[in-house]
Image (tube, rainbow, N blue to C red; front, side, top):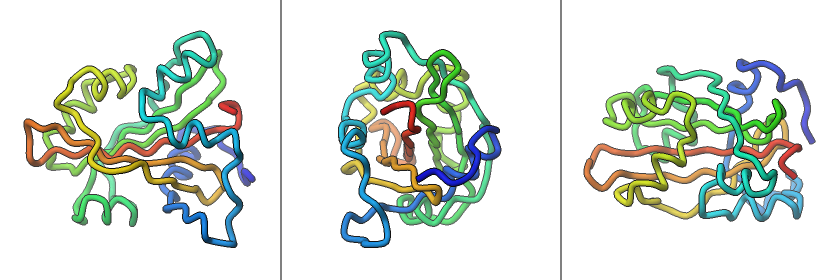
Amino acid sequence: MITGPLDSPANYIEQMRTAVPFNKDQSTLTNPPSSAEYWLNLTSSMTQAIAYKFTQMPLVNVLGEELEQPTAVEIQRFDQQGPVFARHILLCIDNKPLMMARTVTPASSPDVSALKGLLERPLAELLFSDTKWQRQDALQPLVLANGLFGRSCLWRHSGSPESGLLVEEFFLPGLY
């Protein structure tokens, strides 16, 4: 259940920073709605899947790109505690937000320039058009403090040992 407004960039970013791994065995959390299962398990481009469902390409609304401190989940996934570069976006159709995403990489990573270079293009253009980008692990279900569900996955570029993008995607009610 969503508790609290998600109407400003700061509110969206603040909510995304509350992500924790979702454990289906935790009795204090509700399970994701059955309509979320497709999105939680999708291994192809989220942007393309949304375009297919809504018969138009979603627009990327960049909420912010900046250096910040990593969340506890990100510290664990990157196994380091230094600052990260974070890109926050909304995918929208007809000005209706359907998905929010947070992509982070260590501030020292060569991937910072790739994220900055996307501007208002979807991250999928980078990850799914270059075979040197590969998923490094399974999709990990996430839940936000407001009850929204999402997932994360770590990607690496094979040409750079310092590479690493943690992609966190969260599903807004309009997506279902």
